[in-house]
Amino acid sequence: MAEEKLFEGQIKKYFHSVGIYPAGFPSDRMKVEMVGWYTKIWGGGFQKSGIPDLICCVNGVMLAVEVKASNGRPSELQKLNINRINTSGGIGVFLYPEGFDEFKNLVKGVIDCGIHIPALIALKNANASSKCVIFKE
Image (cartoon, helix red, strand yellow):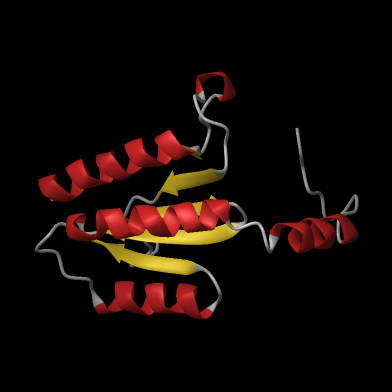
């Protein structure tokens, strides 16, 4: 468990370096322009089991990361949820320390991808109303 927590800290540090910040992070402390948002999911009595550790939205793409230590094994429920995220068009990964560089390449590709953005913006604008509020600062 300790190895997993240390690795999760490395992931969060990387996220901050590329502009992916946690829920509630103060804007004045952002050193890189924000391109994404994430939240840490804590297991326990009030949380559904098998949800990935980090839920992110990066450049309009849903990204879910189940953090694993080198010797970690995913549960059947974790496998089911990651599969469903991928089937739904998001990106779900089991991330081991040995795959961190590949993951960074994946995130960079998501950040650099601009193909879907104009269509998503048009869709949001077309479907926003006083009863379906899309809040922007």
